[in-house]
Image (cartoon, rainbow, N blue to C red; front, side):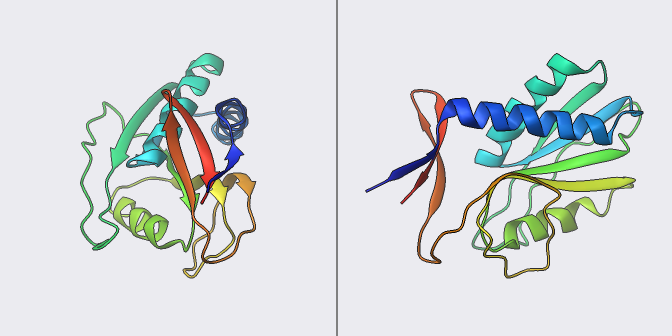
Length: 163
C-alpha cells in the first residue's frame, strides 16, 4: 500500500521555491551549475533548471551524476566543458535517507575548483547516518526507519509516495 506524500503540483511549487533560493544565493553570478543525482535527483534538477530559466538571465547548466548504490565509490564522471567554470554548484537529490549517496557525490565534486558547493533535496527524512548537511530542502518528513519514500513517475508526472 502506498500513500502519496507529494503530488506533481506540490513538487512543482517546491521546485519553484528552491529555484528562488538558488537565485538569491547567486545574485551576482553569471552561471549556475545544477548536478542531479541519477535518476530522480536529476528529474528534480530538470524542473529546477526550467524554473531558474524562467526567473533569471544567468546561464543555467544541468549535468547528471550516477552513483552505484551498492558500490558508491563507482561514480560516473560528467563532462565539465564550460567556457568559464561556474563558481557555484548545486547538488540535487530526491530523497535524503542516510546521507551516504549525497556524501559520495559531494566528495566527487571536490576535485573541481568550485567556490561553492550546496546540497539540495526534495525530501529530507531526518535519518542521517553520515555527517552531511542539506543546505536547501523541499520538506522534512519524519518516518519510521523501515518506511520507504520514493519518487515515481505517474503519467509523466512525478509524485512522492510512502511505501
